Length: 477
Image (cartoon, rainbow, N blue to C red):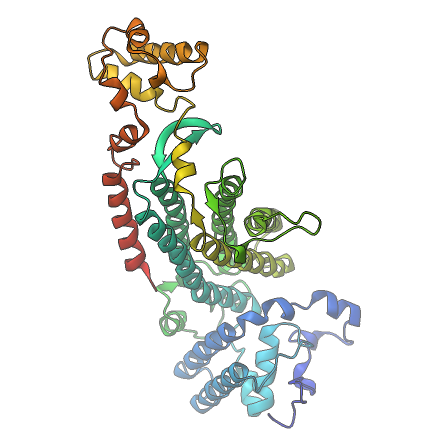
């Protein structure tokens, strides 16, 4: 710790005035400072700001814009700050206006006048655009790995239940017999799209905006391409005006977070239903359930409900960002400072929810008997009656009517299953119906004969398991 830092890491000399203070005869009101500072939000980008500054200083030295020895001192000083932040030897000074101010002031405290050369050819406008991209490029792969972990958990459960019957629903009414494996793999496919959306968005932030300056670049011989190369970007942004005013990436990532959250919410909605006494499809671990303060018998799916309930937060973050940018003229306006809080909040929320969801589902027990019983009654095999007749040459529309007639007969007879009707009653609907219909429309037979790609039969779900497993293995970062 230098002598200019107090025991809390706070910085105390004139180097710590606002970066823009030179034009002003008096400082801002204390309430104004508190209102406009962002360091409590953007402090998480400290390492990204340092890495961007190291690349910038390296380029300044290589281009001869500042002396090479100053560039080297700056780089060494920045690496020291990075080390001390990581080790805890240096704490963030929350009196700083933002993380950029903190890093630059700390650097100047440590290496003197050379530190004041770091901001040469740079504006906070292009600096923050760079920091956000570096931050997202660093943390999004971590979220993607959490998605893969959730997918792997669902796939592992599905492997054990390729023959476990489960009614499929439309309109929350019995539709057709399926399997638990297919249902869980459907969840995994939703998450797979979320992973891919994030990957696509990462591709669109692979360009460096640094060197765009406040809005119109610089008269100094900056080498933007060199900075991009050092930082591992694929190139530089095309237009300096767009570079500093663009927040599409914030909106795009938050939109992806919102979709991910909506998927988690839909899954949790089904878990809540399945955990009820009426369904009894799933028994959640007591580690991921809570009780009631008044009803001793209760075992509540609170964690699934909380994930579902926090969806509004993420949707709100997206609306926040969309509303923020809708009326901003080019180029930079201070409104854009408000981009980080909703972006970070949405990221933090979905990341936490995803981890809880994975742990909750992985530890759950599945009631095979209750799920199989759900396939009995409700006439979920009516379509199979129609397809049985189609295979005998009857046009589907006619067969649909015959199958509907068998359902009507069963209902009028007070029966809940087509197969409980005597053969004579079935043949009264169509002489094409024979005794083999009974075996054809059993829940197991209905499920096993649905062998079109993506279907619920074991032969189909095993292919899906193979594909999803290979995807997860191949995408680990």
